[in-house]
Image 1 (cartoon, rainbow, N blue to C red):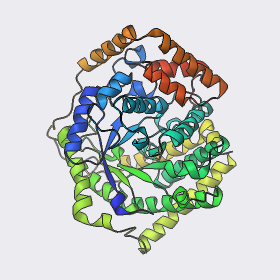
Image 2: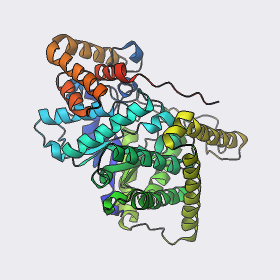
Image 3: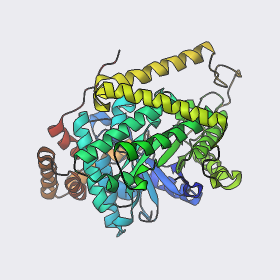
Image 4: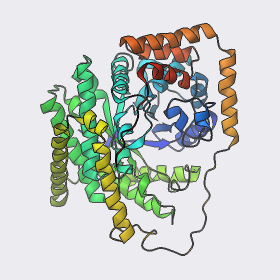
Length: 482
């Protein structure tokens, strides 16, 4: 059951290179945030090192660049890893980044069993809405369950997956689609873990979810309530979980980046505050508020501070976090909750007829449903049926410029030099042996995590480990949806 006092405030730090991100970590900790959230740059997310031709122009642009254990050490320098919670936005290479985090914790003498945090590790939504996948769907699912099994034994406080509706909503889904497709993905992960021989009441309490807080305030409150109720029923009645903690929908919420406008960006402060309040009233345990300038660039420190203060005002001044489910009994909210639940159950029926979520994704059906919803919303904005303040109504002739964050272009060449220097000085024998072991584990079905951990400790890079797995698993080719 949700308790307001469990609410954790998180704020984004990952940007540029590891040293710059570490500086921002310390800034946010000084500002009073209770948890840190790091996003990785695009090459890191899809398994390429910073000196790969595929990485050209992308290093450090949408998050922090991590190639090796040395980068991870710089990222968390002087950060007490066993006393803070870290959330990492990483999916296709989640196993590698988790191994890097553990390896750094070992080096600094932290108690690994006390590490707490979350890796997103939700590969299914990558095929649906986001695109940072590497391997074919079923091989990628095997890596996810390997992480479940290994972390369950070695990282008892770690959340091994954040099953994400956020990116589907950013791609244009409706509230009901966000819940339906997220929970359907969740059911797929649970079944895969059971099929791999894992005990549901051992791994299910460490599952977590990640939702979007959008603009329709009352609908969003109802959406979160419906999701919690549906998931409890799925775990209790469908999967027969016995532990009440297995029934809980523990979820993080981020305000909706897709609602932020480049026009009159100060309006985004109000949007973000309303979205954050809806998440708290709906029962979130963890919250990330976007910077008001993120339609233009990564947030400045001023924007990050305002976003964090928004959370702190809600938590410390509004009083809403002190009551469980404060809208319970409202006719409007209860009606909306029931309506969303009915729509979600209808989607479950359609997915079942298609042969389950993996088949629906591989056919492109889920993607098409979201694309249709996105088209309808954009049509409503274009015709004026839906209002976006400052864009199609209440506009102004000229918007004064606001200062934005610029990532230093020199960071890319600096990062390239670092990874090349590491390759030149490392001992080649343990490095090669570690990659050979990963290849063997991938072929035989042995759990990949011990081999990946040994590889990062032998100075293998993210790109080298991902490429080794590519050799065995191949690469995914997207279904064309027309």
